[in-house]
Image 1 (cartoon, one colour):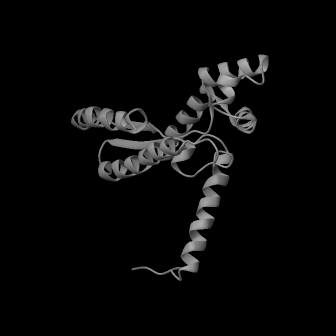
Image 2: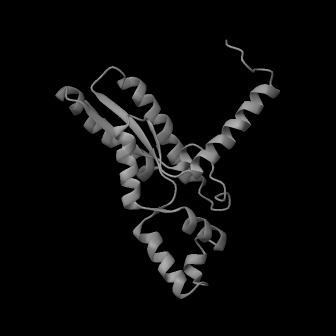
Length: 173
């Protein structure tokens, strides 16, 4: 929580008041994760519950901050990357290429997770390009990989079905 969420809150508390005082157009982009919007298919066995909690906290923090800053010179967005081929992941892949049964790495993720990561990971450069594209488009949500939509759609369908089963479809209070 300290790294993935609280650090972003502290940076926002430090920088945004200065941005507001400056009065020039400014923007804050928070990096969350695909885990902010859903439990990604294939990730169920990773044991990343606290990671997911921290990234979901970023989602609601950014959404509230966007509402709080509406009508000011500061805008907000939320980057939602799926797997990114960071240096540590790339190093793990190199080690697995040399020793597919590497016990230290296999303790962290199994073959199914490795396969998923190899199939879905984008480079840090690709992630940065997509972040800038979303920023230029004025988006709040900036997803980076198409598989994230499937996870969001699955959550949306489950929520919609729950509203229907509860008899709350179309009602407004």
